[in-house]
Image (cartoon, rainbow, N blue to C red; front, side, top):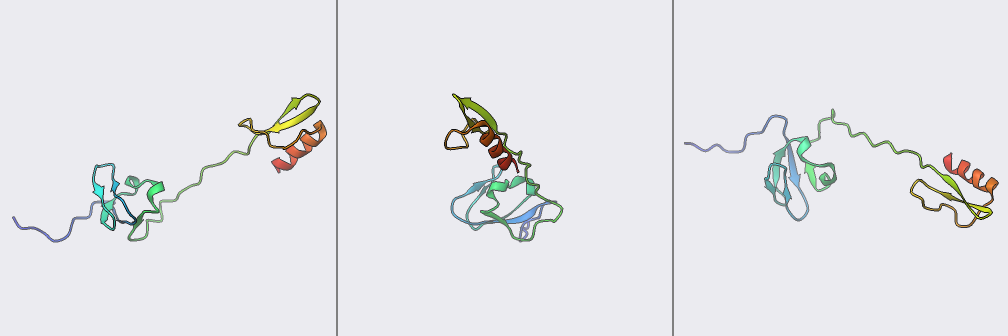
Length: 113
């Protein structure tokens, strides 16, 4: 049997290069060492590792990463004695001191805009 030079490129695979230190393990179990080039599909490389694993050629333009929608924070006025405190959706106080009802409502309006 005669050996061939080079490796076959898989369908839909992109040529990547591992930069930095340490090794990386693909989902298939293949271990990638530093400065090694390899073929893998776009789905095999997680987004958080794309700063260490760099495509040799430009990525296909059809793959567009859509940012997640962030919901505006919800603020709640809670009464503490005769004064009020503004809390966010996690229950953390936004204002430093106690406020009157009118000042708390104005503060929420300013935060919402």
